[in-house]
Image (cartoon, rainbow, N blue to C red):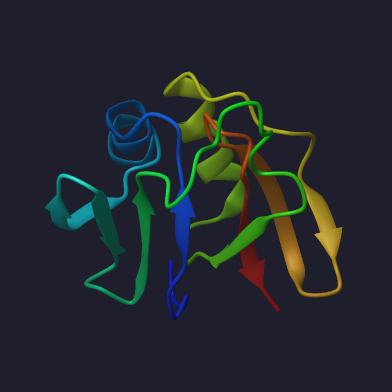
Length: 119
């Protein structure tokens, strides 16, 4: 990952989401507290957080219309294969976008994460 200024996603189960991002996707934990987990990757160049809800999420569908894009140095074909080995189901094939070659995964709450080899 190269650049993401900051984002914070509200999640239904902080522990399960933390495990997904850390153990399956390989994000590095930067800081934690009982309400949030901040991730850093590639020596802090990309940073974002997952957190407990700021309001009730009961009956709400999360992730709809939300996508985070991460520019990656690793070849997306190789990264997608690594994610598949880690048990992650990708959301569709590798595609060519106006920004470069990319693929998508969804986190446990339905947030779409896009991994991109930028042009």
